[in-house]
Length: 601
Image (cartoon, rainbow, N blue to C red; front, side):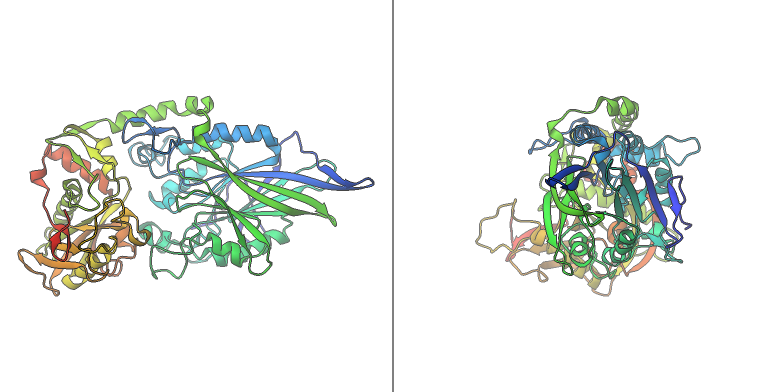
């Protein structure tokens, strides 16, 4: 993939890498405050770096799945329209010319709004629309954004079109051409803040993304892009930025702080490496953290080489929070030095939507609302995910049934057509519901909230057993005589709901009184004990097929077939073809929780 040369890029003769250079901060310019003894003034300058992350297509405070204003128990509000109001408040407080606005990635996937402009009315079509997220972020005046892993979900063509529609750079120092290993996106952005009466302040922003892209979106990036570790790329670029005269270095990293990975040992890099970068790489002042969907107002990490403190902050996802890094600089010995950095958060629920954004994107929003409210079938009864984490729920069986049918049809006439097809699905949502009566695209989208696609993998019975044992680690070990609290029964070791899998077509018990690794009991296929040598076709989403969640065997298993159509779309097609959504057509009780052989429920 050739190096992207946009209008705001210059080619660095020293590095050969794409470098985003912005001009001076807009007037009115800031004055350097002077303190110190009479006749020996000390010049100071205050800079505020604002940041968002994991916007996931949220422009308005709207829940497309519920067709209503967004609301949660904590009273949060979300959307770029709210962020726009907060940003303008900060710019008035601090002086627009003393601020910088960044994002840490995952922008163009996550809501029906982003799906619509990727697939239904795609931005890649000739004469196609400008992406709503590009319109909003341009209007708000972002200075730069890091690439998130979900930026790659719709393929490189969609990502490049989105990039082209932005008025600011998408940064990814560790997103490199697979062949040349040269940056495929601008690694950094630099902005000069002119301060009357003093030397200008140069601020560099280094963008880092997630190595897991190589696994999760392998179908799009394999052989084209590579994603080295954040630590090694930061160690490469931060000294370069300092040598170019950067007085302040901020990292925008689509990577959490835990130092752990969800993809096991499939790549030799850490998924959530932001704190590692702060510890290991000298010369960084602040890190805007993303990816983990956590709220971290301020985290101080000491660099192991210099002993200096690096300040990290992660604003809550979906534009629910805005991070502020307040950076104080002092002019000493002919140069600016960072004296202190502090971080704080502002809450989107404290402000109203910015009318500028509302006016700009109401038409696009209303198109998507109409789209998701299309009726595609009729349900004979209400289906819900409320108990799907600990009981075999018909609503999840709908997913596995659709996946089984699609894969069986795809393999018809092949050498694998006679093999039994089993299917995997996860209880993504705890609140999804398909009500009795009319079924809309919105109802089905709320059931399958990710843009995953379908893959067929070849596994043995022994491998399926190991897969189920790994999945069963999701449950907290609970003694046979202990009270069962369903709120404390799941997510053992912090495992999220989307990394717990049902597997259809088999029958099995999960004995939660037993230690992890010894929980699958009475595993049968076709009424007989499972034969470890039996071959199965597993219908599995691409995230899991590529190693997401680090389930055993599946990532290395032989791939028999795959497609680019979203599973969500396949569900809508299946329901549309049936016309009637009746559990008798898809529901089955395949598994149950037990303790010492006795059912928990």
